[in-house]
Amino acid sequence: MRMLFWCLCSLLLVTQPAKADETPQTSAARERMVREQIKARGIANPAVLAAMGTVPRHRFVPADQLRAAYDDRPLPIGEGQTISQPYIVALMTDLLGLAPAARVLEVGTGSGYQAAVLAALGAEVYTVEIKQPLHAKAAAAFEHLGYRSIKSRHGDGYFGWEEAAPFDAIMITAAVDHIPPPLLAQLKEGGRLVLPLGSPFGYQNLVLVTRRGGDHEVRQIAGVLFVPLTGRALEKK
Figure 1 (cartoon, rainbow, N blue to C red):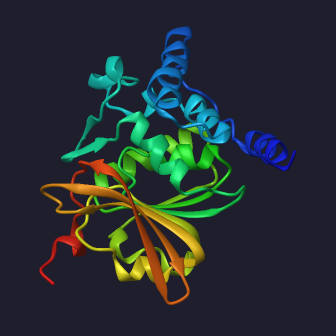
Figure 2 (cartoon, one colour):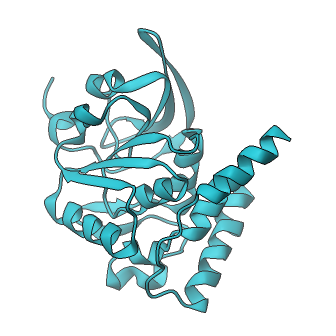
């Protein structure tokens, strides 16, 4: 009964911003995406499935990628960046284990799609993007679609968002070869951080980091391939 109650509460917390340019075709494509790409691969969290079925992914891709918006693959969004494969978005979201009204930091806004999915779960989202053109596009999309629980800014996400810390969860959406110390410091006790850890130009593992006192636990999830986290993360240490 407790689990059922939590699921119902989570679904009620899913925000419902206006779906611009929604058509029966995009709605059907999104339902098929959730059923065949996400649920079929083992994502069972009702709140995550509902969020993935709510956010209009086609509003976060360039015009020349609209036909592929719900395909089972990452897509280019400009500035050498991509919007992640839908399953990976769902998997990373699920791994955070978000409670309703959680405060979440996202490093690497990109298209804004991942932040919108987190907001659709009822999270208070802080998202940082180092590339100004992508930041501007994502911020405009959040405003247009009515995602009022998302705060975004232009900057190097390696350093987090100190004045908004501590965070219940942190997500890094680009590859880095170490866990950034500033982000660990901004994570609450028991908080979760998910990131692609490994060579920014080679093999990476999606890992889940949980803060435990002055230390942290790391659990490997799956092999992945992400674009590199730029800025301080690529500077010689």
